[in-house]
Image (cartoon, rainbow, N blue to C red; front, top):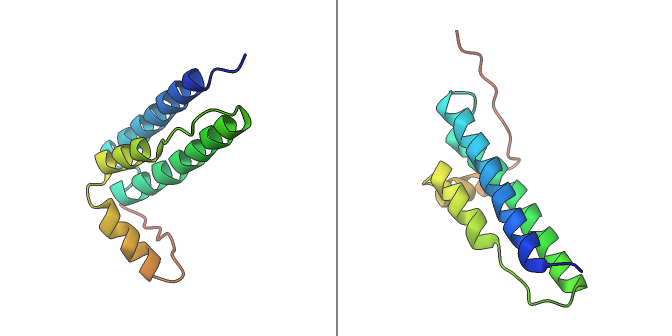
Length: 101
């Protein structure tokens, strides 16, 4: 039998592992906090949707992982809400590549 609570816990653990890997990339200078936070946000929102869909199919109450995603994002980029607004205001949003050294 499908266990939605176990599925949610597994999704949260996966989110935390992914966020930790992005934090390591920021710490070693491979990514900016803004990019790492955006990647975690997009990945996390996808996980949250998968959990919500699974809960609907199993006729379980809908779990909300969005707060977990927002927490993980804020741990990487404390200004993520401001940066999100700036990203939405710049059309089209883009990634700028720079070569150091």
